[in-house]
Image (cartoon, rainbow, N blue to C red; front, side, top):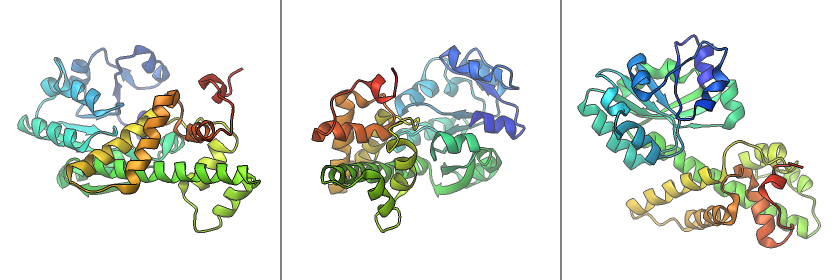
Length: 290
C-alpha cells in the first residue's frame, strides 16, 4: 500500500517500531522517520496499518503518540482491522483537538495490495472522505463510503466473518468429499460452476489450498481477531449470531491448537488434523520448509 502511494507521486514518510520493516524501502523515495513525533510533524495525512485496536490506541493515546503530536487540520486514516467502539472513541478524542479521522480498512489480500486494487470501506465525515478520496484510490480500486466513524471497521469485520465462514465450510465439505472418495480438485471445480461457489472456492482453494501452499499472507490469528470483533458487535446490540458464534469458536480453536501464526488458508490443514485425515505436522512443514 505504501508503494502504491509512492507510485502515485505522494511525498511519503514511513515509520515502524521494528527498524527492519523499513529496509524494504531502501532505495525508494520514502523517507524513514525515527519516531512518531517526527512522523506526525512531517505529514499532513497519517495512515496506520497495525495489527489490532490495542496497538492503534497505544499509537494515538500513548506518551509521545499521535494524539499529542498531530496538529489541528491534519487527518489520521486507520486502515487496520480495528474495533468500531475503539475507533469511535479515538475519533472523538482527536476531534476535540481539531484532528480529523477516517477508518478505512481494506480487503483483497497481499496480491491486490501490490496491484493497488484493494476494496476500501471508509467511515467518518463525508467532507473528510471527499478530501482524502484520491489518496485512498492510490491503493484501492473500489472505495466505499459507509457512513459515520466505526462503520468502516464494522463493514470489514462483517465481511471477514463471511469470508471465514465460507472458507471453513468449503474446507469441511472438501475433506468430507475426499474421505468419501471424491477428489477435492474435482469437487471445487464443480462447486465453482454451481451455486455453492464463493471467493474461498474460486480464489483461495486454487491459489493456496489445493497446492498446499497455505501462503496467502493473512494470518489465522488475524482472522480470529476480526471474527471476534463481529461477534462482540452482535453482543453489544443483543443480536443472536447462531452461525457466527460457531464459526468464531472454530477459529479460536485453530489458534489454541497453534495455528495462529499460519496463513488463514491453513484452516484447511487444521480441519484435516481435527477430523484425523492428516498426521500432525509442524508449522514449518505446513509452510513447505525442509
